[in-house]
Image 1 (spheres, rainbow over the protein chains, first blue to last red):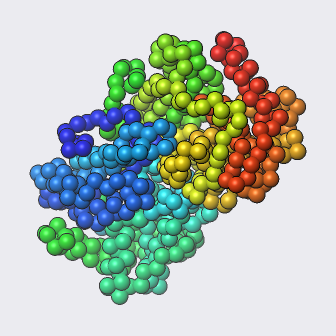
Image 2 (cartoon, rainbow over the protein chains, first blue to last red; image 1 turned 45 degrees about the horizontal axis):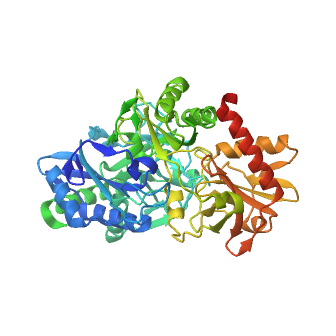
Length: 276
Length: 276
């Protein structure tokens, strides 16, 4: 682990990341020693810093440290946390903010390849996502909603929980974004009031357009989702997982899901071979 | 500072308090070496643990550690943080949770006595509180909304910001609960969807009842607040601060506010002289 460039495993108690969840993070796949879609993660981090008024430490510095941690790993997960650092009285931020940066490398989770090939089983979570446009879309450190949702089940046969907002709109998985296909059109949730704007989500929106598939962000209910032709979830670590079951409703692994899986794999290969 | 009973100033990076804001806290006034309303803070912490499924470490242990830190301070602030500890993959909590407890002592903030006597100046914040019944009322570590709200102003003439929820209902101050008086009745916000259920707030609800003043929790707008006879904010550190100004609207420091200030001071004296 690297804390502000030094090998350390601890953080000051006074750090606002610990005191208030006052920060942001990125979870990045590392393949053959290279962080995948690194520039996109850095762009999102920078955008998050702008929205939370946290000084951004600079892409070059983060790239240098990420490289240092990742270069000897064939397969890993790189986690990058930025916080508003220490200081300030109460919620008030300090006059001079010294952003804390924490980079850590973790083993790549050993998800069975079956998940990608044959799809996963999901459930609807009882825990609802709150509504807040000020924080929507940002991958910030206030993640109690996801933790409560993930604590709802322990059955290892269920791989992901689908979260609704308090108005009953489907938003995302606890750790993934969610898409569905209906009549050859791709749909995903609006993230104006809740949810995380995922990197893979944004890649897939562009990619589907390039492949001639209309992709629409809109508000939709459980019923709309359950009558879909195909459903899948995605994030930077798992890529695309088809959803073969939501509670008692079954779905085939459909053509568009397969097409996007293949497209994403190509795109990722190009990216990690220096193309992006 | 005490981390799990040991003098330390650092916390593991893997602690879920740092990773996700996965925890709770209490801010407790210390007067003459004694944490004020300690049992009430512990009760709220216990209730928060129940709602977040964090194992509660036991009131005796926390009391022992709080005493150890506080006993030589005439005037201080004791902060008590509990987190879900380290471990678990992603949002999923570990199978065995080892609650982390962090107690720290801070100087009592040097607020001018004028705030208590003549009242404070406040403003409405642009940052809105999101709605989420699963987290409403709890003093948890996900505090980005308050941080964004508090970052809206630096003018030292303004002592507190008043926050509305995304539906336009007035909820609380960035670090205080809010009450207003209209026609001899006391009103405060419902905290079913947003806000922190403060210790002083709950004491005042009971106290006003005992003093023959009706106290009503309800949903109200900016307009209702601006047409109030008296307004005040409260928390465990400042007690009661009359609000003498919200933006351009002025308020007198009214009778009921004074009555509750006196009542709270008596109640606190009894509590710290061993009565509670």
